[in-house]
Length: 228
Image 1 (tube, helix red, strand yellow):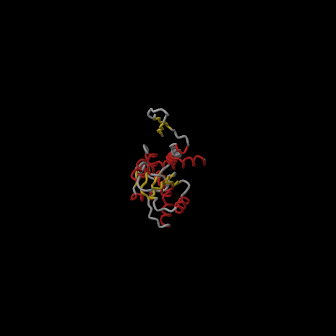
Image 2 (cartoon, rainbow, N blue to C red; image 1 turned 135 degrees about the horizontal axis):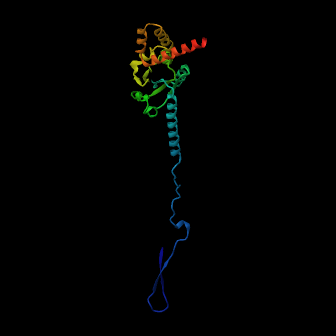
């Protein structure tokens, strides 16, 4: 701020003009900057992303672990299940079967490049995944059919893979009507004790049946030798 001062000397000279500059010193005269809080990026989003990524990786590893010694992998329509229904269903399954809920993308990542990749047609909607760790496929499917009937559920299998082959919803009768191990053993032993034509018909059966029959025959020989 500037103030003009005029001085009048005693002589006849014209008055002199002087300019005095005053600088404000009081705090309230100085322009002040607003005291705004400083914003720093929160670390929480990155932590949440890391946790999410870790959970996804754990899910993929869990699926891969379940695929070890797995004979059948089936997808069940999950939408509409209540928490209690799903818990009851899990309890109704035998120890050789495991039921998991996982996103399609994570399951697809786990089965990529394996024989289970044939399950790709099921990668839509919401699915629960049934891992069967026994050769007794009909016995593994039966508990779900019983549960489905008792609870009057419309949720059905959306597909399955067995021995590298995809079975759609309309093909499940083939899986449910497969002979049990005992039936295959009986068939094998009967064929081995019958004329050659019986053995030929047995050898023309699916590979799984032939293998199980041969296992039964070996077991029978071992028992007979052990008895002697």
